[in-house]
Image (cartoon, rainbow, N blue to C red; front, side, top):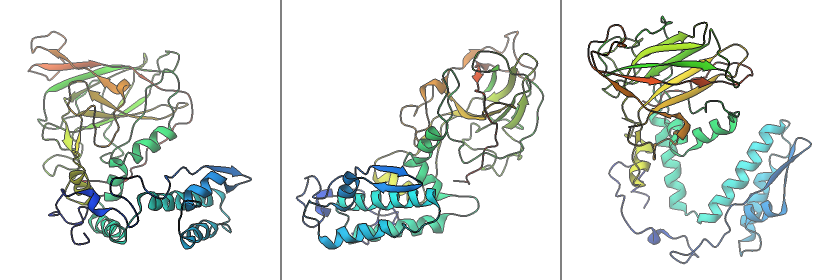
Length: 361
């Protein structure tokens, strides 16, 4: 098996009977001999204390686990006992406990361990200043979306957040109300407008919307060598009534990179690498929490199985079709076009600037 790692070898066969790889001491198709991870942790006085159930889960005590294995887990967790940083100690003790419990639960074999190391090595090799394969792992395992959901619980009535994504570039051009963001032909014109409101429905004048998206070629400007840097990007300010408007294009679904270890994991798992069509929006206003979100096209495929688990039903919106001779046609549009009206609701709090986590292209 060591010479056919699906995460590092593009030619590795994704078939085969998984029962042929059952760990020693396990019955093929049966539950693992060692228990599932059910670690429970509590923080007391700045340090982490394991409960009895956590210790049992992490070490497998009482389940015929070799005493040496129990000692390894106990010693590894205890090694952080002298850490002077409570939060770092909490994270590392919990990580080690859950990681050891995972190894025990699945009965990880030596060859599988070697494959995992090889996959991490390949991830490091393919990562550079333009591509962040580690973040792609986080995205496709749902960790990025989970961290966002935990960090940004949505106040009642406010627009939900979702992940920033890898194609955010700060300092987009500041454009006039209703201006277009396409610097060249990029798809069907889409007039997007609405209001930015607080959580009780009051308009917020002077709020900034930072928007970016892909074009009909599925590429963002940072990916497209043939497009200007400012293509399909822009910042807009709301007017005195809290209204915003900009001329976008209809976004299209696109594929996340599949030529590295993450892509091979997806293929081996019979998962696709598509994201549904969406427009990115960051809303900032003094005295309000910064909102980082997507607007998903209701007619897009992959809304139910986004490769990075970022879709939330409240963020799905519909485009209305408009004819070229519609008197409401935006300036500069000469063909049939689309319209979307959407209010964005932000909650009081401290504003902030999103941090670019790195590229995955």
